Length: 136
View 1 (cartoon, helix red, strand yellow):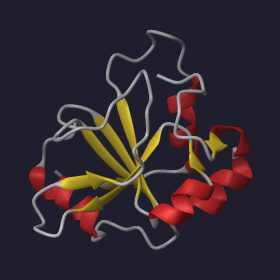
View 2 (cartoon, one colour; view 1 turned 135 degrees about the horizontal axis):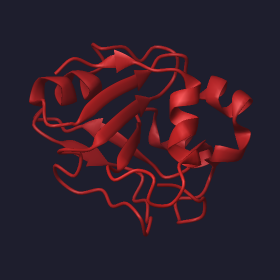
View 3 (tube, rainbow, N blue to C red; view 1 turned 90 degrees about the vertical axis):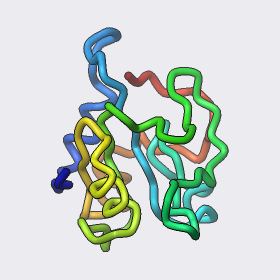
View 4 (cartoon, rainbow, N blue to C red; view 1 turned 60 degrees about the vertical axis):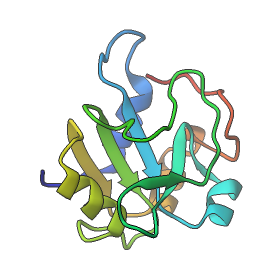
């Protein structure tokens, strides 16, 4: 599976679908350091890293969302958007892992970085890892 770049509007659209308007969950994965994630991130995102053995993703956010859970292989058959700073590309370890695995329904990465999203759509960004924003 090939990963494709997406723009800020693609991330925003995840939050604007009416209830029941999307039958496939979108996982938003933040690949910045967990300390940075905890200060501010896109709502309903998970802070992940590739495990040291290279065979799994590890969730460092410990986020608790009612509408979406993170578990082993939870992205299978789902839409996935990976973001971080402005260096995220197809060769980022998390993007490369998901691409090689080929189990996502769609795989996108946001190469402009979190600061661009926060500036354009500050109302979808938060420091909370609890259910709060209307999404999905």
